[in-house]
Length: 170
Image (cartoon, rainbow, N blue to C red; front, side, top):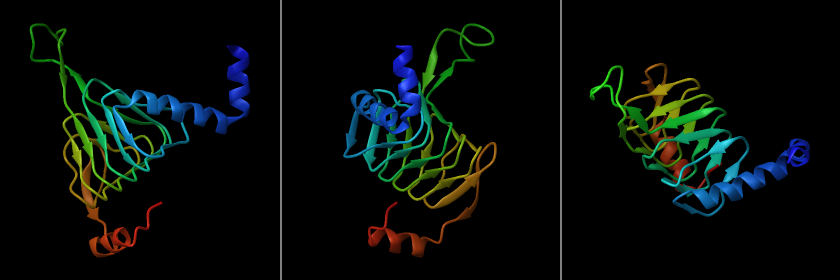
């Protein structure tokens, strides 16, 4: 086992191919190729659109996570769908969990170390700035950052939809 790890460290492309195959066996459904270039953990409740690109993302919890087409993540991103119940029968929380789903639209881009909490929808074409903590919905073409993440700008929608119509996807 140690020898296999050493070999994989010297051949990262082989390691990423193994991760891609493992990921495709785990997820609920996917459409076509998946590109993985960093440690990525998805759950059986994950639904992938076409052409997702992961550079390091961890999905945790029992909630459903739906990725639209052409999703891109930076390194060390997290999506958390389960929460401790702090309004239950014990302090600071009880033994129950609250589960909430996450929906991510087409052509969404996460910078590095983005955290998304359950119950959130991120609209088509949105960009989430590195280090942001997303706790509420982000509208289509919104550019958001901070903790908690807030929209501070919008993409040029005319330009975005023109590129989309031309099929110019990275």
